[in-house]
Amino acid sequence: MILLQVPTTGTSAVDSTAAAAPAQSMQLFDLVAKGGWVMVPISILFFLTLYLIIERWLFIRSNTRVDDNFIDNVKDMVMQGNIKSAESFCKNQRNSIGRIFEKAVGRIGSPIKDIEGTLETVGQIELSRLERNLGYLGIIAGIAPMLGFIGTISGIIRIFYDISLSDNISVGIIAGGLYEKMITSGAGLIVGVIAYTGYHLLNMLIEKFTLKLEVNSFEFMEVLQKPTEAARVR
Image 1 (tube, rainbow, N blue to C red):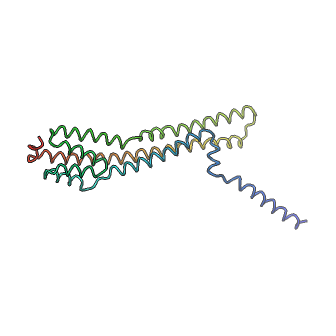
Image 2 (spheres, rainbow, N blue to C red):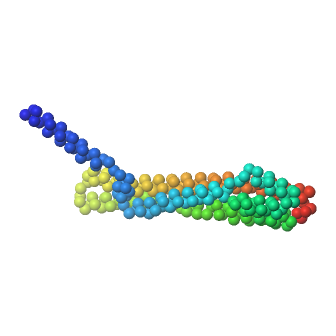
């Protein structure tokens, strides 16, 4: 009898362990599906966030690259009177700072204030191009967590509504439904953090470029205001 009982006990233990193992493992898709309908807009916001961050990063990187010798070359050409060469040099840069100084160099011969106004105006246009669509990241950073909370609150309301109908207050029922609804809060917070981080990192790149632009503009205007060049410019 003892020999017959031992295999039976071992087999049942193995079977119960094998049956419990699949229940404990959960795929990412299953988690998303358990979050409910709120996961649909959160997923859309997630992919939109990734697209905006990658697209803006590539655009900003390609348009804010500035050669260390750029402004020195422009100043040398202007001081030598090679205005057309300086203008062509700026145009060949194919970036924001090149377009800004191309317009400024083209205005040489006009009053100093007109050249300064050109630098400011074209600079603002280029900065606006760099900042385009960044506002959407800021909106997503605020909306995604709120959508997650909405999903959680609506799920909790549903749980207590079902309890009121069944009159069965069970820890298993409450915990099982609650963890599913908390998925939306977690997903919303993750998307919000990614959007918030991307927004501020991209703005840091733009601020770095703005500082470099201001320094180069000051050096450029300083050359034009030298006595040897002042007479020709005015």
